[in-house]
Amino acid sequence: MLEVGTKAPAISLPDQNGVVHTLEEYKGKKVILYFYPKDNTPGCTKQACGFAERYPQFMEKGAVVIGISKDSVASHKKFEEKFSLPFTILADPELTAIKAYDVWKEKKNYGKVSMGVVRTTYLIDEEGIIIRANDKVKAADDPENMLGEI
Image (cartoon, rainbow, N blue to C red; front, side, top):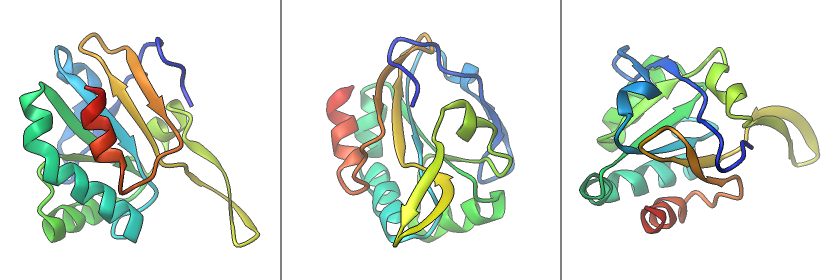
């Protein structure tokens, strides 16, 4: 996990519509950048729907929400449409941002060890500095917790 107080690494990834986004374009706004393992899984769906539900409140506070996983643009599009997600979801199948933000880790599931995305949420200020970093994320609680952090 990256340290609070450090500059957020640059990002240039396609969203669910294939449009490339950079972190630089959000300068002047707070950014909730959350990394999640996989579209359409129970925890990831709860987390995304929680952010969607509170999205107007995030916007009122001058913040944008961006989700990132290693799923494809097409997978993200289906996920967005299925759950009416109002925010940007970036596709990172090459793991460029996932590795830059130090969320690609060894995970143990039922005794099996594999590499994967550790659910992590960063709050980045208007100048691109990480002001909160949480890698002990409970999917269902994360959106409400982040709303309180802004």
